[in-house]
Image (cartoon, rainbow, N blue to C red):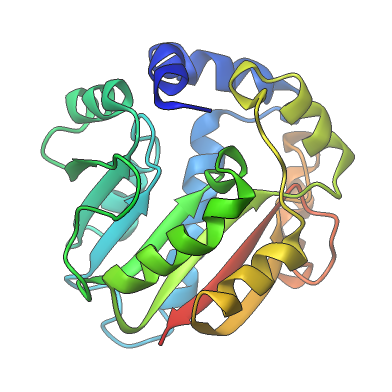
Length: 233
């Protein structure tokens, strides 16, 4: 989807997203929060890992993740980047003092090298032509400090409910879902190491009493989404 299209959907993004995921019984905030909580649970194992971190949210959209970055990483310096000026305007209006907002106009990220401790991208790359994935992953790696980690979440094309949601979503009309093993391989080609793949979101709200099992099911390629992580070399 080009910048103009993202700008066109920005004002109604939240309502469209809520309508599209209605079958799950959850709200957009549920899906935004689980990812940040997932990162928090992975990083809190390291002493002081969550203090004064510099975090890049690549493809932040209208800022849906911003309040959850503030909840789980209250001391972080958060930078949100997106190609859509209108989306950034909305994010800035909603959470003006919670992050720095940066317009990404393609090519190189307008950010210094070796700055960030964590980079995050949520359901962004399926809107980006496959031929550009490697370059963008390399750009994200460039702005990470050595051994910092990228957390990239994507829709799982192996899940039939995910396919239905994407196929009926107005702002996903251009989406090309990425097989998890392909993204795993792209990470390695982009220079990340210790690359891992895990599946997420197995149970709708009607079965939320089973969600305690989800951390143990990451190896099953049936989750609605997946997460690829890797460390910057």
